[in-house]
Length: 366
Image 1 (cartoon, rainbow, N blue to C red):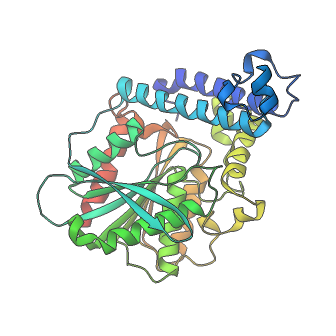
Image 2: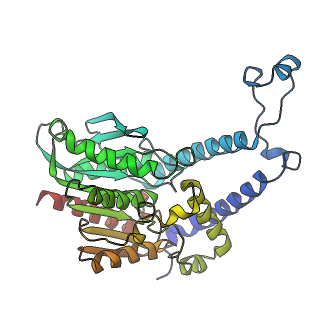
């Protein structure tokens, strides 16, 4: 099916984004004296200068490569948040006002993680619950991103379930398996505090989008392996399930006119950012598709998009689950791209996507 006209202008912006990413990484590999002046980071304030001589003379030492990278990440994350805000305002649907609380969950051997609890109403009724892991290539995103917040609000209200959004740590400051361990700790915390949260610990789901889909799938594996709570459902939206890149599908890339080299470089950069070692890509908690055994996992709804290089990741994972006796449904939305769920005010497919997730979450009431 042809690409939906709604995505045509966004495709042009995506091409420019990929090109900027490649040029940016190339710039970062150059010595400072060859880097373009327009790309140079602003000099530090005198109070930030590490050298007493520099502070005394007023000179501004060149930032190190690590400092330049940290500043670039900060700029990228600010830009990503602003883009997310603008997309929600122009083409998304804001969520309703709901009772919301934040909690800090300790994680043994790893940084503590914040979770945000969305209740459909300010009452004492016990409800099913769903953990949610946002997307962002493991290195951007957060529970405060406007579309993430709107998604959690709408799903909690329309499915009448408690949604727990997990603010897992971002890479490369924190690498795998930090995020999966934080997700597992959040799940155990919900079970342990189910009574005060008004949650039925026997009716739990784990959900995630894109990179968050990888974390969600890994949490279900870890929960099974550690003898945790039986889960009712996993919902994986455009998930990445194999960080080795073996299941990357270049057909959508070719049809959209995006050079395959740029896509490969971007995907490889994501994996390198998240994983401390190349061999970690074969770890099933990083690449759930590579687990040797998928028996005993919860039923799955896996949603993919026709114009998404990750569509084979989702389809292959669904097939692997079914081969292991797990009830798994894989749905491919035609004519749309990876970030389809954002555009519920502008795109019929996005509204259908949202409705299907809500229906799946409502099944927890059965």
